[in-house]
Length: 226
Ligand code: HEM
Image (cartoon, rainbow, N blue to C red; front, side):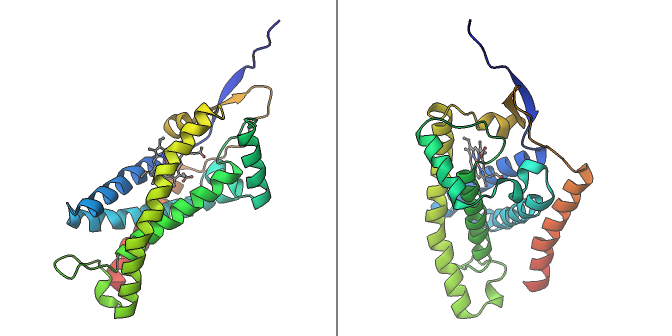
C-alpha cells in the first residue's frame, strides 16, 4: 500500500515582506537598467533613495516583523550553513519554513550590498548635470571613496542578483523545494505530520509605523543633511 504524505498550507511570508521583495526587485532592476544605459538618470537618483528606504524598512521589519521575517529566526552559525549545503548536495533537504541557514547569509549580503549601493549613490556626481543629494556636503576624498564603491559594488551585487533566481531554480529542480510560491502567495505546503512553525504577525499599524519610520530616516535625513 502506498503511503502518500499529506500536507497543510501554512503562513510563511507576511504581505509586507512580499511587497518589499517585489518592490525591491522592480526598483533594483530599474536601477541596473538606468545606471547601465545612462537613460532616465534623474529617476535613477530618485528611485535610489526609495531603495534605501526599502532597505531601512526591511532592517526594522527584521526585528519586529512576523516570526519568519525576523533575523533572529533565520540567522544561524556557519556550521548550520555547511550542514545545509551537505543536505542540499545529497538531495536530502528537510522541510524548511523560511530562509535556510545558508540562504540567510545570502539575504544579509543582498540587503547590505543593496543598501551600500544606494547609500554610496547619494555622494556620486558625474561632474556634468547629475549630483547625488549629499555630494556637496562631502569632502573630496569621501566623494571619491563613495564614487569608487558605487562603481565597483554594483558588479558584486549584480552577480548575487543573477545567482539568486538560479539558486531558487536549483532548489526547485534539484532539491525538490518550491521557494517561489511562498514569496508570491505567502503560503507554504507543510507536512501534516509535523508541527507547524510559529507565525506571529503584528498589527497593520506596525507596518504603517515601520514604513513611516523608514521614510523619515531616509527623506528626513536627506532634508537635514543635504
Ligand atoms: C533585482 C532583483 C531581485 C532582488 C534585489 C531580490 C532580493 C531578494 C532579497 C533581499 C530576498 C530576501 C527576502 C527577505 O527576507 O527580505 C529575496 C528572497 C527571495 N527572492 Fe528575490 N530578489 C530579486 C529577484 C527575484 C526573482 C526574479 C525571483 C524569482 C525567481 C526571486 C525570488 C525570491 C524568493 C523565492 C525568495 C525567498 C527565498 C527563500 O525562501 O529563502 N527574487 N530576494
